[in-house]
Image 1: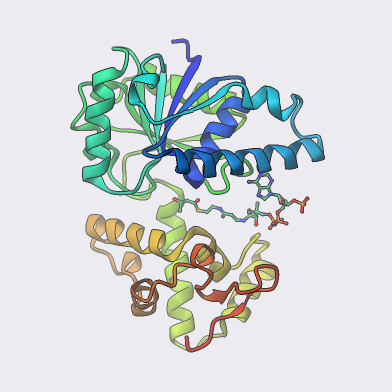
Image 2: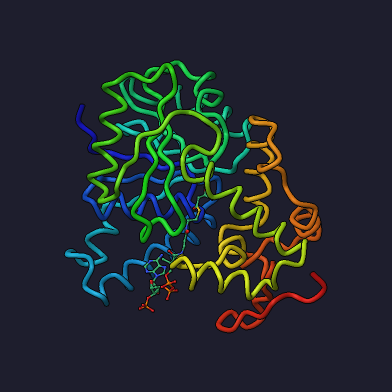
Length: 293
Ligand code: 3HC
């Protein structure tokens, strides 16, 4: 199975990162967005990231050579030649279903469909398509250009050939693929989410301050970010959504959102993207712990 042309659906943080790494690896990439403004924003991020890599000498080609393999579009018909589609749109089942039905209308018969969902059942997404055996999960991590891992997720319907083609594709992107099954949260979020929620519970129970819990895990365990910095980085709205899906699946307390997380999301404190979460990013270079938590 030859993969040459890649279709990416969504040019947000994840979609643009996926498009960037695919183009960097030599694939021809077409990115679909609902509006030109979203494409422009995503492409500006890609240009910034490629410029940074060029400055550091971590890419062998010039940024403009890589960018020449990338095309943005608002017309789904432009994706018809894609050998693999990677969907990275909003985590909303009806929206994703609508997209897959539309893609099935333009895609080649043997094209692979992949979802970058972090917690929605891959099987549930696959169910509306005409290609259950050619449907997989490819879960990338934020920031995509820097994080080496990709979780390759199979459902009970995925063919062996497609699964192995997806593993080989992830390797070509210079990522390290891990194989996993369609269980909510896959490997990383299955372990990461209870840890992040426990950090909030520890804070709620007065075990330590936000800064001390962050420093404890950073300096005591060698994690690149403490749990509260990571929660703000991933987005509290995203984390809250993931906990909801995982709790629904497992009905276990360790996946239940602590009240503080729920309240912060209700207040619109989503973390870095809104300028406020566990930390206040009024000065992004010097975040301080948010007041009143
Ligand atoms: N492209 C190119 N370069 C980038 C970049 C990007 N997108 N983002 C950051 N960089 C560069 C920075 O500019 C910086 O360059 P410099 O050394 O020249 O200043 C360099 O990378 C290092 O960045 P920082 O100095 O800002 O900070 P760190 O050294 O801490 O590295 C990090 C940043 C790689 C994000 C590191 O903090 C990290 O690994 N954090 C944990 C991230 C993580 O756990 N992600 C997974 C989240 S879970 C997830 O995504 C799953 C989902 O389902 C929820």
